Length: 489
Ligand code: SF4
Ligand code: SF4
Image (cartoon, rainbow, N blue to C red):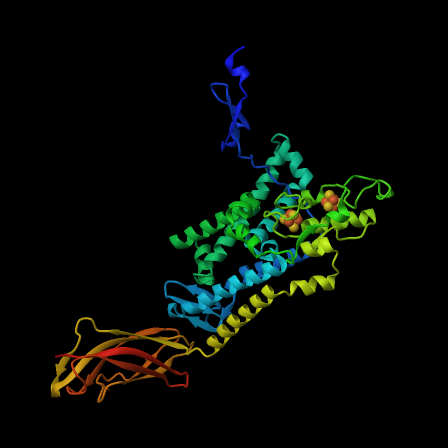
């Protein structure tokens, strides 16, 4: 007997590429290398209709009407929503924001994060299942796939067979539709940063700029790749939210659950059979809940991080329950506590309103209120003061000390405005230049050079704090900006 036959074989887990197969014997014959890499199985989600499916389509329409429609809306003479990066102005209907208004973007991000925490604590991955662009575009692409290649069984049958002219035609039609929608999506995305009406004219004359072409193609192909090919892989492996959302779940979070107490033991039976007599639960083990799942999981195995909470399995299971004449809700939105303790709907709602949810709601409400009040009370112009770096201070006629400044006044209103400039903070300090009143066109910014003078003995040599007061003539408010006045030795 050879030595290698008497010894037990060692198994070493490694990561191999799928084409290497599951087990690779090593060259010395003593060791098996076992791949931990599971080859990706293509998912063919079956179409489904029902309550949650209808809500998904409502959200698809809502989000896409907003996304595709918004950049075409006009507000006076300009696009209603435009992020003009070149001019460094953001137009959102009547609001004109400058980079100095960055605080509002921060506020928006804080509100988005708090909303995500709140909705996740209440109802799990609502965002993923109904409003995330990845879900929404995958839903649209799947619909186009069904229209061109048929539903799940037809697609699986054709993909399993060889290439036929019909299959080529169907695939070509599908990819043609996918590409058209993707490119339109990329074009619309660019329309949020470049006036879309002008962009449309440039597109018609094949005269688009290189950056516009680049971003249209980039965003378009990202849509094509993510919604057409990567699909659930984005949710499972790329999205960070999928990884940390479980930290926001608890046993009172509404999730899609399988009622194992009611469903098990599972088994096929005829419609007329008595499940009690057969010692079976309500689950007929039809596997339809797995077939409709866009991430290909089996909800009957319990809460899994791959579940995006879309409710497709609940819809299809309800149709099975209807056919069998059983009560609906074997797979449903519920909480882990509610399922294990057989809670009523009122009890579920009472437990949903728990301290963590109330705290999230209070904090979110406060931030939203602060943001609304701040926007309502915001002065519609901004001022930046820059000291002239070429000359700190100089002595002029009459022994007076002169400092020079540059003021940038940004008019965020959609009409021309007149502003008065004044200074204070030092005895005898006056505006020596003849531009104490300036006019600035709508949504424009203007640099104004101003000279300030003070008597030689107004203050000791050194740097002295002063304030510029810029007042809008039409009662639009006053902005105070701090600076310093230098008195030389
Ligand atoms: S769809 Fe419902 S009945 Fe069919 S296998 Fe899934 S849980 Fe069971
Ligand atoms: S398990 Fe159900 S709710 Fe979760 S992703 Fe699959 S179909 Fe959607």
